[in-house]
Image 1 (cartoon, helix red, strand yellow):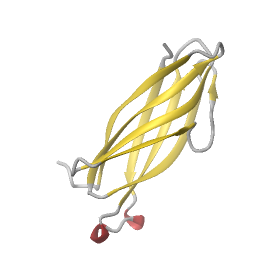
Image 2: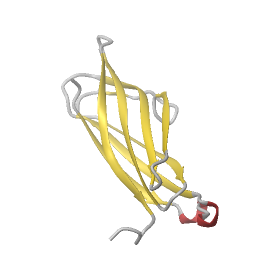
Image 3: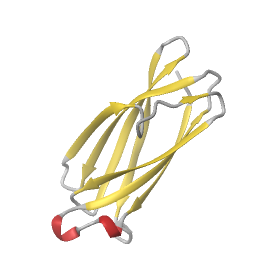
Length: 122
């Protein structure tokens, strides 16, 4: 199984949000590091995005931000994206689908992280 390290930094985008319309925009920056000894390629991702009302959106697609990055051992790939939820607090979790140089597919679980308007959580 591939060894990755995934660091996620979410941020609330107040200037794009409209709380009165139930639209809370967040950005998230992700740094993926290949901690293994093999070359890997991130070929797809699946996100589960939940709001505080238990509404869950599932998003599946090829690569990330239009790319299918290949990472040599020790290399990083960094990207940013955005998401909109209908409550001031929510969460995301996901999966990355990876291929090694032999074409063997594996998955990497991205643990849940919180999306929250500042000062909403204590």
